[in-house]
Length: 81
Image (cartoon, rainbow, N blue to C red):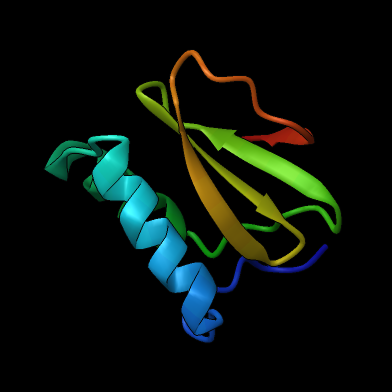
């Protein structure tokens, strides 16, 4: 399983995540939980996946995070812990 990649994200993906974070109203607490999870250097599946943080979801594909969803929005792919 690949490790999630944060440092070498393509510019367009980084910009999309930034805009979605603002649009979805991620709070400082949300970002702190995301940062704590990122620091654990998690494994992610090769295909579509999502991590549910309760107030938001992080969705990705392979090693790259792709977008944020709100709590009630349906994510595709494998749910990861």
